[in-house]
Length: 172
Image (cartoon, rainbow, N blue to C red; front, side):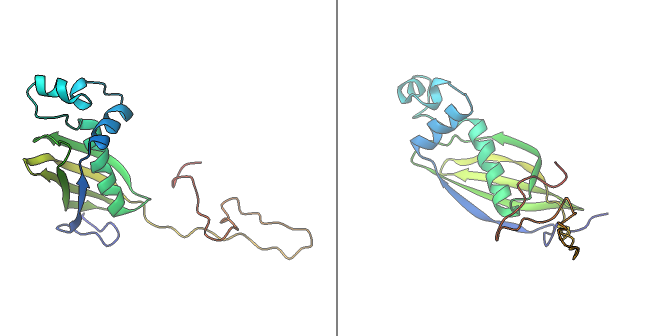
């Protein structure tokens, strides 16, 4: 049975996300993912291996695809599966535009077809499965008028204005 993830429906188009591919983004992504291959930080080495410049690694691309999905679905979104394939490289000075279309919705889980294109063509294609847990009301603290009584509900909301739970739903 197919149902909705919030207001999400099959066929919904996610707004595009433009990402400027800078030398810093390529190098920082490679370092952050511990990918020290020279083609991701040394332009001369990349040219010697047939590339016009350094290029983004798959782990950085994977992270950007994840960001695209969670930016759209919100902070409660949990990535369940990311299946991507690389195509045209992302070189500094280019822009990658990520787009997505919802292909399937089952309960609180959606599958989104994602494409990231640059001036050379499709850099990344794939699907992402994301779960957005339903919003359940958080019980309020109990009130006892007995002198000296305190709230007894262990799941009481924070008293600080604007405070939110830091623990993901279902974890303690």
